Length: 339
Image: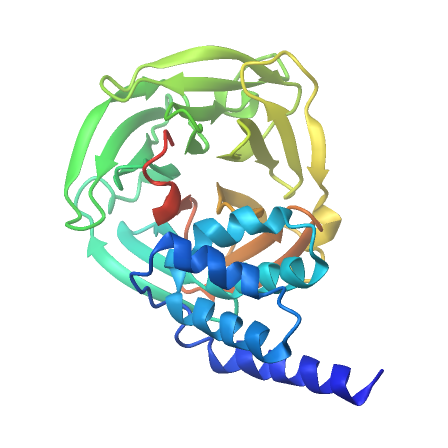
């Protein structure tokens, strides 16, 4: 490796590290200027490339849509720098409701995270016989929760809406006389949930994907049925595929409203380095950018990040509160879309 090449790598690394703190900032820069800076990433001059890199980092999340478009670049230099910029700039905002009814926001960046309690939700979230099994956020920034009321005779799931800014709760209606284990919105804005056969006291071995009416809370069965039991979590990716997790943290993927076999996506072996025997994946959400987030829980909860391309799993942090659900905020640059 030449001295010039080594110096270039060191300079690039220092540039990325020194700009991490400011990566979350956002400046109002015209799109034409951002595109020109991206083009400059492939300039023959090393100084021009470095200056463009520094300017894009200072621009912050405003540059993300154009940077994501540039991930199709045929220029290896541009492609390498763009991928690292996207990784440095992206911020994921997650939400979860604890077993005792507290609403938390977890902000995750590439090398840091922050957990903030937003509200202490009132009854019934703080009652011992009530659990929040599913959580999803719509493009308008409202949370929808599957709240399970447990009794000796039967479980019942109800749909409620929670405003994360105020903690205000609105009950919408009854979903089903069963435990709905996971919620998520499809790219076209429809709300889906999962009812596993082990929760329905059924003789069948099918897990049913349901569509939930946002006005009434009423559930309608879809054509998607999976020949697996004990599925505890649901996420829907940008291509409209349902990703479900079973009790042993295995992940399976299947197209929405399709009669097809679930494709094994990730085995529990990927979690072996930090999972205990009885840990389960209780919450799952699509963080966009090829990343999934999950909450594993048994005696305590911890948050994991799953890279879809490499199938690698990273434990981000332990959660001092018990969590059975997880929702991801729609990224700012896609919030105006249908999701």
